[in-house]
Length: 128
Image 1 (cartoon, rainbow, N blue to C red):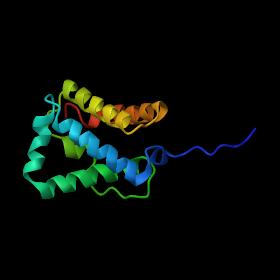
Image 2: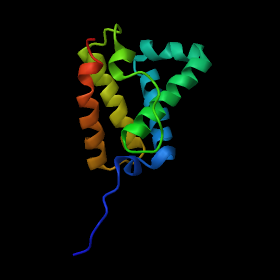
Image 3: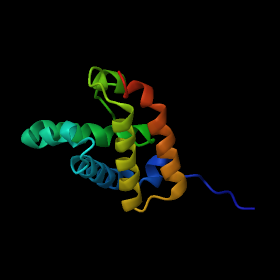
Image 4: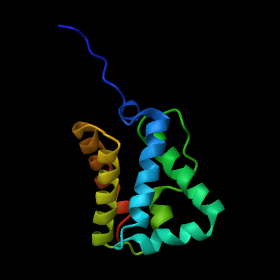
C-alpha cells in the first residue's frame, strides 16, 4: 500500500495560473449573466478598480485554498454589507463559479470542495 500525498485545494485548482484563469472565467460569466451582471458591468467603466477587484478575487481564492498569496482585501461581510444580495443572485453567482470550474477541467471532488466553501460564506454575502 503506497502512501499518496494529498494535494492542497490550491494545487488541485492549478496553482496561481489555474486560479487566475478560473477567476477570469467567473468574472466573464458574471458579466454575461443577466441575473447578476448589473453588479459587475460597471467595473468595465473603471479599469483600475476592475483590475484591483480582479486581483483581490485571485488572491482571495489563492490564499483561501492554501496558496502562498496574501489576501489583503476586506472580509466577505465587510465587502458585501449593504449590497442587499438576494438568495437568487447568490445562487446565480454559485452557478457561474461552478461553470468556470468545469470549463477549466477541475475534477468533481474539487468542485464539491469549492462549492462547500462557497456555501459556508453565504451568511456573510447574501442578505447582509
